Length: 195
Image (tube, rainbow, N blue to C red; front, side, top):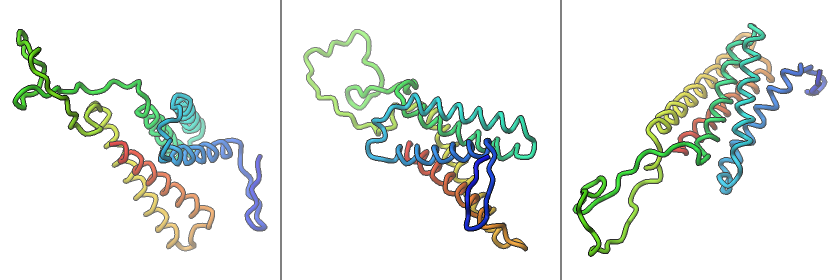
């Protein structure tokens, strides 16, 4: 058992609680690194595997104890979303097929049998940065953006409900809920920035 001291109150955390809180702290740190200017230069394979393992940890917690099943399932989804972020940041995912601009504004590959050897035309890339992203990746990123935003809004409503309850939730409980709202908002922002 680990102990945290809040004023004169000692809070005892189980090993599962310490690991869960540590994984969430790691998740926050990882998102901060992603947002950093040089974050895309950092390796992605190890964090991807760490967050996949974290998802498995929370799934095991959901299976093991019915008391916190929904919370553990939510945390497992958040860790899977982090793993997805790192998967998308790698170059291992297949890009979408890109159309090549032809002569006269036509798109597609050149017509068979046409010789273009006498023409010297510069190639200008006017496609947006997301042109090489597959529709599946873009769609899943949109789904995760919206899902994270909805989760953030739900956590904020939960925080307001707990603050106005009679008696109001403890400061520790309110802080935990506010932290979840911030994490969900951070996820929504990160997924939106990836599109």
